[in-house]
Image (cartoon, rainbow, N blue to C red; front, top):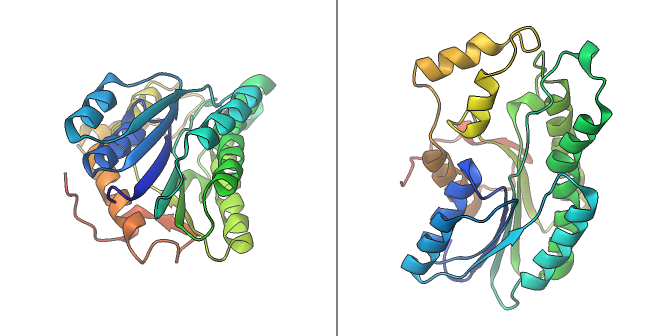
Amino acid sequence: MDTSTVAVITGASRGLGLAMAGQLLAAGATVITLARGTSPALAETAQRHGARLQQLQADLSRPASIESAAGLMSAALPGGASHYLLLNNAGTVDPVSLTNGLFDAESIETAFNLNVVAAMVLTAAFLRSTPPDADRRIVNISSGAGRSPTAGWPVYCATKAALDHYTRVLAEENPHLRVAAVAPGVIDTDMQIHIRGSDRGQFPDLDRFLQLHEQGQLASPESTASRILQHVASDRFGHEILDDIRNYDIPSQT
């Protein structure tokens, strides 16, 4: 990634999204973020590297806010770049519950809005607002949970499976677009802290995640971000629509 790259990143105020945004800014890319809040750390990184940063605030769990965010993003996208990148990273693991406890329709709707609907609407706006002859790449951050069932995560698994299949349709409709749903592995983020605080009665797999943390087997957001961005910039990206960054021997550059 370089100064000819314009990148849009959702969920960039913390975790993996924050790390990807910071590394893109350090490389000189123009970065547009969409998140509930803004990040002083990203603003400082942009200033230090002389990069352009626009932080748009949006709640991507609400349909009206998603539509508004799509319009703001379209207006913010500059023309004339040779590379355009959309990283649909925002997501939630909630509600954590066994299937017989899923009575809260609003919490299920919120998860689908954030994990699936936002990516679909923002992708449509991105495709309409970027030149078709540019190098355009879209990354939908997925999860292994969308590809194998996990008890206690029926909503999370369903949303990530939906995102995966949507990505396959997107690739089918746009053969010249580089796109993939990328599973990033298990990362040491606030989401993992939230998962470790789950009720064991509603999340039978809790001990596995506690052990991953205790044994130091969680990847850092910075190293995962570096590996994903290197992969996205490579010629290999897009050959596997349902992708997993753990399948590649990519050393972190952080």
